[in-house]
Length: 64
Image 1 (tube, rainbow, N blue to C red):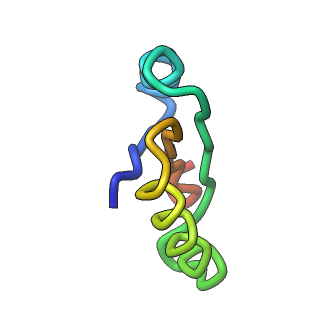
Image 2 (image 1 turned 90 degrees about the horizontal axis):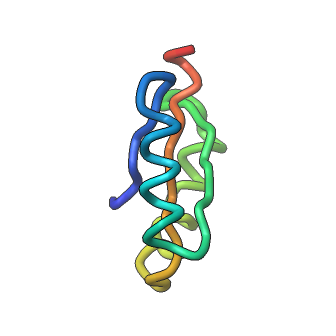
């Protein structure tokens, strides 16, 4: 899995960095314990692997 984990401390820095490298930045909000979130993760992994111009940033909601 190539998702980039972001949090309050590094969000702005990573967003700027990823926008400069990729055309599309997708934010995935989710939880490790959420079954629908985990099911969606498999689809996003395929999307991430199939496209070079997409960067997926993962925001863990349980850490808020």
